[in-house]
Length: 257
Ligand SMILES: C[S@@+](CC[C@H](N)C(=O)[O-])C[C@H]1O[C@@H](n2cnc3c(N)ncnc32)[C@H](O)[C@@H]1O
Image (tube, rainbow, N blue to C red; front, top):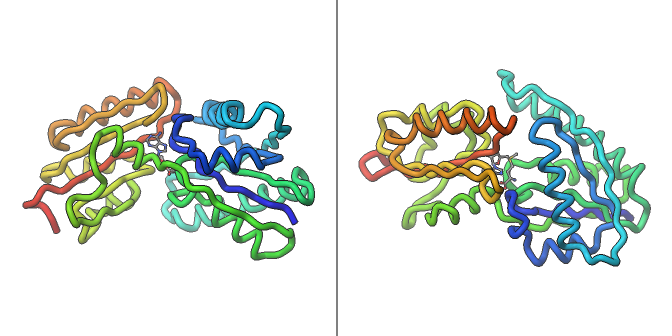
């Protein structure tokens, strides 16, 4: 039997790491690091920093690197593309488990934010466990998601009183406001989708690199700050070569569905 830990490490601030995650880190023999290429080495370095900071000095562990499969983000059939990507990732994971992890050992993925949100690690590891070709069991440790970190940073809540919040993507927001929700938390926006709400009475809290030294936050009425967000966002992406940003939207009363 091999054990796999899927450990949420928070959204970029090493202090997001929970005590439960620290205890799990100290049971791990091999950390799987998937290189992605662009944002890349900085996020790998942050994972190594988490290990250095929180794993007991006398504990022996190792890293196993692999290259994460590449994919085209702007294809018309997004779900099919992500399906292909996850199939390729599954093959990478299977190789890592077979070649880098010995029987009786524990391997771990250090997942950005919380593993339950817009991350395929749980789905892929579950598929491998169910396929049964490898004898593995896995556990999941929750982490602080980027949208929780953003809400705290902006001293706000995700929902209005008794209201519902949609957690969604830029792609879906571009197709229209999520019906029945007063609030939306938007991730994975490669297209400035908030601009599609121009003319509506909406408050926005936008944050990039939240919890990291590059952090930028802009809050206000969408109509007042949308252009500034677009400008700052483009500038930050050009400066760092990558960006991770999210935003919280609240429809004001007269605009509610
Ligand atoms: C693949 S998803 C992973 C989400 C992650 N599991 C979480 O719980 O935050 C990546 C998206 O998360 C958001 N994100 C992750 N880290 C962030 C950060 N430090 N600041 C702002 N947004 C972040 C961005 O919307 C980014 O496009």
